[in-house]
Length: 129
Image (cartoon, rainbow, N blue to C red; front, top):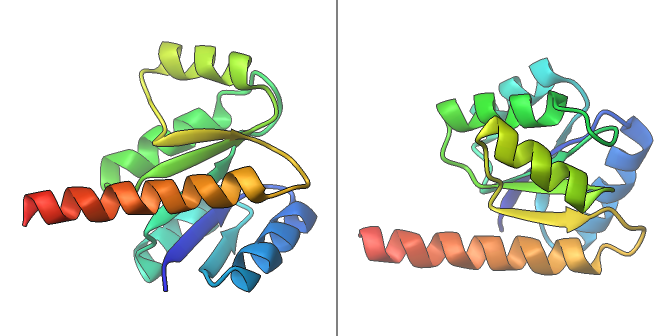
């Protein structure tokens, strides 16, 4: 069972995503604050981090992601409502997520992206071994 760390400041949305992802067979830990995110990162050793991008154009999530990536090699999936703006922010900040998905009430795209990122990680681990 793969372990996911979901970072979303909206506790209701985080809970809904957590339920859906658990029903799909993932072990999911949710953080709604930066301090919770860092604590959980150390405690649960996730296979993938799903990071909510926050308000359009905000750099807070990107800065958090850069800090997470400095202490961990866990791939980050950016969940965003504005792909174009977030892509520009990523370029300016020098940070690149493993993948980006548009926020939606249908989690199909997120589910397939998680599976793809996990598959890529397993493939990369096999090459490194």
